[in-house]
Image (cartoon, rainbow, N blue to C red; front, side):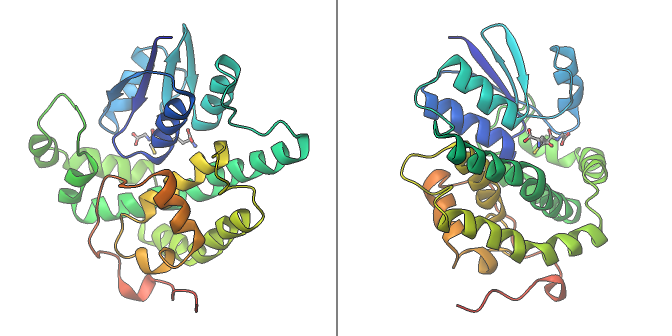
Length: 247
Ligand SMILES: N[C@@H](CCC(=O)N[C@@H](CS)C(=O)NCC(=O)O)C(=O)O
């Protein structure tokens, strides 16, 4: 089974796709793309949209972490990414949708807000990537790419502040999915892979750690996606940070 996964290094949905391929035991090659440049490459190799993850598998082009989950279950049903029981499947699909549509983007915006203020931080997120240019050069010349990505992701001060304000409620939702058993079981499902990568990426930001580390969400990320690449030392204005939940 020949597969190629197109990623941006440390992208959380791309990591979701990689984890699901590993879970299925499907071997694949990975193409690492620089942000912004990725859009042209994805179009050039025939994908309809401009975001990663994008997967070529058995002659098909599948784009988007949720679409990839379904394609993988269709192509290789075992082990399954969704429960067979219809009610449980509905619950997992709703948690997965939450992870994709509500949790992913605030974390992405906070990360790009950080890169906008210190592009040297990009280096740690590119560990092990093959970008076709030395990472030092990419960072030195990457100011315009960072500015474009920050703009594309609307990583403004106002949005970063709103993201931080919404984070405790988003983390409560993740903890509630774990408490309900929708995610966090011994055998992970598509929602585990979707949600754990956003939490794993969030934990690379030192500013966010105190908010996440005491929570069940952090234990889930540690189990599903240990050693997430990247590190952003404290960078967000302390006045913007919510108080950690009282334990
Ligand atoms: N919700 C989509 C999100 C895809 C997405 O926005 N990916 C980002 C990387 S995390 C991307 O490709 N951005 C383009 C860029 O930064 O140039 C999914 O789960 O597949």
